[in-house]
Image (tube, rainbow over all chains, first blue to last red; front, side, top):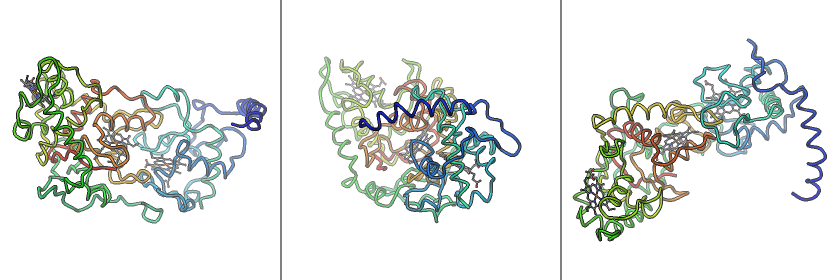
Length: 152
Length: 270
């Protein structure tokens, strides 16, 4: 980190966190309805580009590990553990997409292989460093959902 | 490499026969009763052509270097009793032939399952006056590979009626189906429900253990418990200690899941 990013981080990050915390829905408070999760987790419109980045990032969504996606055909190695996400926005509306990303087990069965990205209902012996944490942050979920909305 | 176009179907394991130095391996076998699959399949069938080719010829197989190192250890005197493995067991190609295909066995002394690594340690401490090897250290992987290589081609078959082995099998089955980590996946999520599919560039096999220690092109000779721990770690979970009760139970159960497959040690995988 150079001095510029350090200062940026010091100055801006605390207010972003404070600002987001006020509106954010905690993982255990997510309201799953029959039509999905209709309320945004943050109240902040998801960012498509940030969503695409989180989708690809192996440390975040790592969605390509299991899903093919023609929109990212420049990236190598699309898995097929799950279905292709081409045209997924035609199959599900925003609320359903949000529910799938938050906790796929709510939508499919408890047997699904897809992880819950904003859920504390996880497996046993979670590594210490990630205890009590979700895979994606609330805003990252919103960003990924916004990105999925472009896959028509 | 799998690109978007191919997606949707499972990529089948290859229809090929593994022949090592002219000896045909059993890489497909009818599954034992109570098994979730009809057929058990060697991980060899799921690898790319170049990787598969490295296993068919001992001179090409990079894992054979480790087997030779293991042979040297077999003949090396160590410990206060002034003995080598060969002092008691002579020619391993005779005394160890087929032995490893039936491990884990029941160990009446510890009242637990014992695998080859632990049997080596038992002989080192009780028969040689030498120290037990630490996990993956000192020659443990090489000597294990050498002993298992003496069973090349012999089908895996456990005798679960020994001692309490059946209850360890049950416990191992629990471990196999328990979801771990932040990603909330079990062994079955990847090696049963998703068998034959691609996770990133990796073609998911049944996760069979008949080729261990295996030679991995990225990381060299790899022990079974190291592989187990790696797969558990990938679910973002803390992993159990090597040779812990949990992993010995898992080894017992997963070995049974490969009943009938030839011992392939040292197999070559990516």
